[in-house]
Amino acid sequence: MEIICYALYVYTIILVIRIILSWTTMFWSPPAALTPVIRIVYDLTEPVMSAFRRVIPPIGGLDLSPILIFIIINLIQRQICY
Image (cartoon, rainbow, N blue to C red; front, top):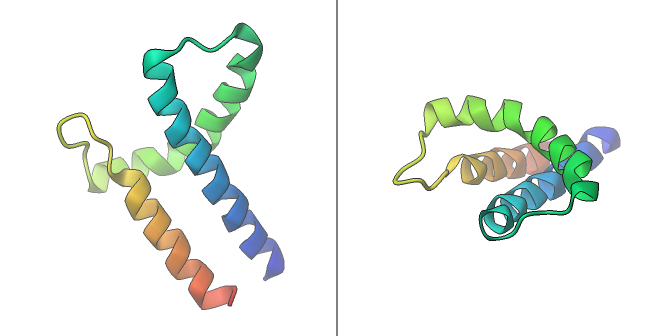
C-alpha cells in the first residue's frame, strides 16, 4: 500500500507542475534544455487529464479537470493511506 500512496503523492506533484507549466508557458518560452522535462510531465499527465476532460470539458478556456483529479486522488489516499 505504501507504494500506491507514494505514487499518488508523486502524481499529485507532477500534476501541480503541469498546472504551473501551463500557466507559465503562456507568457514565457522555456529554454530548449527544459523541453524534454516538460514533454515528460505532459506525457505523464495528459492521458488522465484527457479522460477527465470528457467528463468536465473546459469552460471558457479554463480546464477544471485537474480539480476533479485532485479530489479523486485525495479520496483514494484517505481510503488507503491514512
